[in-house]
Image 1 (cartoon, rainbow, N blue to C red):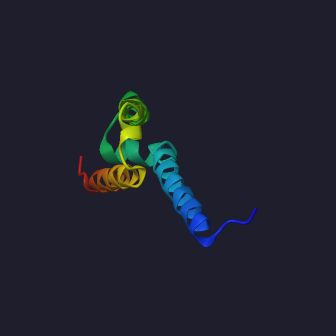
Image 2: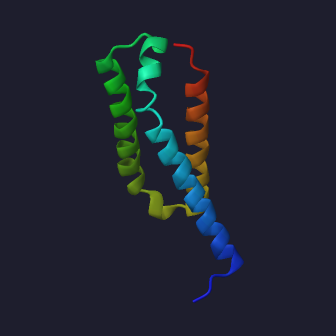
Length: 96
């Protein structure tokens, strides 16, 4: 079965979205050695930060599962990805 160009585009966009979310999540742990002294946090506080990121992703997934099927998936994806970009930008601008 051959894919039409639109299907290839959709798969590429979904792969890109998944890549950015995983990259954002996975980049935090290796940067721990640089972030601990820069942010003046202890290792236990940094562990809570990494855990909070994973827990918030899990909780938001569980909360979304109840109403996601009733909404347009494209709009839902754009809404959550916009929130992801906003959250990442705000974390980048944080000074403490």
